[in-house]
Image (tube, rainbow, N blue to C red):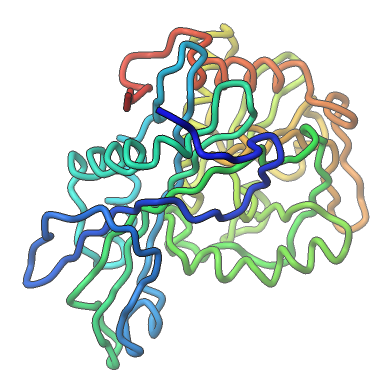
Length: 341
C-alpha cells in the first residue's frame, strides 16, 4: 500500500481532510447500516438539536504503525464504553460497542494511506462524535442523531519535543457538583474556552481546576487528567465524580503498577499537599504525558524538583513504557491493542 505524499515530520496537531469518514444515522428508533463517505461536509437543519442545545458528545483515539509494520488502535473498546456513558447522560441513543469498534476499523482501513510510518512521530487521530440532527425548538432531546468518525494525520502534540508546562490554579470551575464533568460532552469544552485563552494571555499553558464543591482538591485541567509522583515514587491520581475517566490515565496507572512495580493510588488530593510531590504530569490521548514543572496558585509558585527542564524520571519511564506498548516495542496486556491490518 502506497502512503500519501505527506511530509510526516512537519505535521502539526491540526485537521487535514482524509479520503473517507464513517456516517450512521439514528431515525425511528434505530441506527441505519452506516456508510463510508467521501464528503466531509455535514448538512443539518438550522434548528438542529446540536445547534440549539449543544447535544453532542465525542471521543478521541489514534491509529499507529507499529515497529513491525502493523496498523493498530489503542483500546478502542474503552472509547466505546465512555461514549455510551456520555450518550446516556445527554439522553442520546447509544451506538453499539461492537459497531463502534467495527466502524473504527473501517475508517482506518479506508484511510490506511494516511497512517504515518513508524518512527515519524506522527499518528492518525480519530474523532468519533454524535449529535442531535433534527429540528428542536423546545428544550428537549432531539429525535434524530448522526454518528460520525473522521480521521486526520497529526504530528506530535508538542512540536520540537516535550517541554515542561507552567499551569495555574483556576478561579473558575470546570464542572458543577453532580454535573457533566465526567462525560466527554462538547458543552464541557465550550465552557473552558474563555479560561484557556485567558490562561495563555497570562503566560500559562493550562488551567488546573479544583473540585467544584469545596475548591480545595485537585481535579483536572481543561483538556487532560493529572497524575503526581511522590518523593518515594508513588504514583497518585485524583479521585472525583466530576472528572473525565481518561483512558490514557487509567492505562498509565496500570503500567506504573504492573510494568514498573510502583505503588499507585487513586484518591482525593488536596491542593495544600501538592508542594510535597516530586513530579506532575498532564495525561491524555494527544500527548500521552506532558510534564508540568510549575503550578502557580495566585502568585505562589509550586515547583516540582523533577520536571522543571525535562520529564522527571518516573514520568519518563511511564511515557516510554506506554508508548512502547502502543508502538509494538513492548508486549501489551491482553485486549489493549486492536490490530487493523
